[in-house]
Image (cartoon, rainbow, N blue to C red; front, side):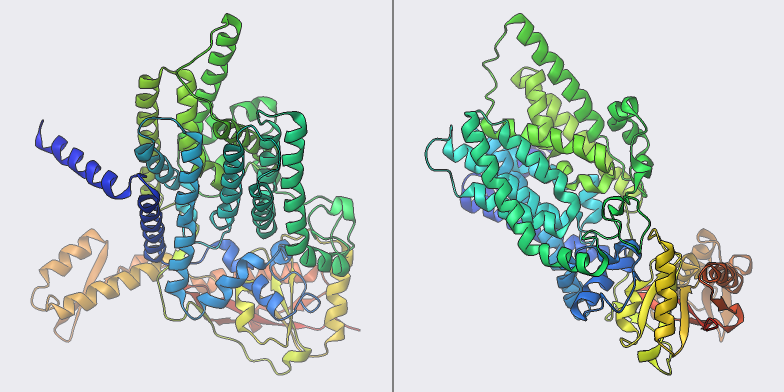
Length: 619
């Protein structure tokens, strides 16, 4: 045995002794270690600044805490009216302890490992080497494209996935503990419904998983009477939890707008502030049955089919091909009357496979947005292993599944590295994560601020005068004519100033280059490398397409004159001119010459904005 092989065997043996699932203590140790690892990775990634955070995660929590539902009008666009409960902890904590908040959020996301391992432990009951296999499959699931891209972010898919995975685990435990159910049902069915209801309440897109879990329970190997009782218990508990947790918010939306999900599904509810259409982001949906059937292969080749950023992976293509092979193998055995005795199909495995398949089909039909697959991607390596067992003989199945899972992880990690960790938006850490240079308002309690356009701006509102009213114009909300009339009426009801807030351009690429050059200059000064002929700095300058400037006997890196960045003033004028056209649709006038740029930032990322006085409409 050569030295590298011996080292690998020694390392795996050490990991197995300490983190293999040889008992409850070992499993707990592994769960805590992985959760803390993901917490540290979350801090390492930096300050979260994703589009949704800038649009509604901060604003929605602030609006609920300060009771702004009747004061503001969709400043975070159509997302202004999403259930805000999931955003409250982050809003309250991140302003004071940004790094600690990131650590806690990443650790919470890391709980997916423990839950996926619990699911795997039940699904793979009776397998030799289960104590080693289960943690490896669970860890592989946490190295999926969606999970890694959203680690430590406020986007909600990883965060709410914990509730869905916990509900699934409780259902599988109930099914496994009861065996073939008889007599009194396990309390786990009811608890699973409560946990699932929390997941749906916090993020309504998890409704597809509620549907899938209900269908999975109905597919159990029990009498139909027992199946219906179990599914009914799960459904009643889920529905009751949604009514208690999300119900007050939905009722408030109904009273305010006439649509509990405003502005979504307005084709049904006909709320007057939005046109009567059922709002949905249909650009991601497959165009027909054939494309839907080939979708896993197509979005593996072209990840932009289902995502704004490239989340590179191959696991869905592998699962797709294995699923076809498993179905074909099952049909052949059924027609030939062959019964396999070498693979134990546990009740947990059966329910898991049904849950996975139904959830994917529902996702494909309703959303087809990659990040909503967070739950399924965490479970994907486990499902891959189960499918391989149904296609190949046991020894070959283990080798094929292992190679496939290693390949999927390698592709995901390579893609993560190539695309900058599938970055939805991060910035460097600062002591104050959110900074806004608030403009002066003479009469904020009588003033109206209009957020112009579809760029996310509402994150600034918690740091602007609270007495003013804020509303969006020209946003992604499908406005009706009544919406425009309401804007004009609210302006008329407040006799103070009217202001437009719109984005300001910033050459972030140049900002980052300047920051990096400043770091290099600082280190060169500390190490006295900025004196004499400055050979090292000149070499760095050549590699970075920069210049070396000499002054006071010292050298410093500086960008070349021809790469000094875009003309930000010209870009800002263009943005202001576009805002003039938008405001004209509401009978409002604005002069771009009156716009002033104010500083704002999330972490180290500069996000300045323009503040422009708007003429009051003639009475």
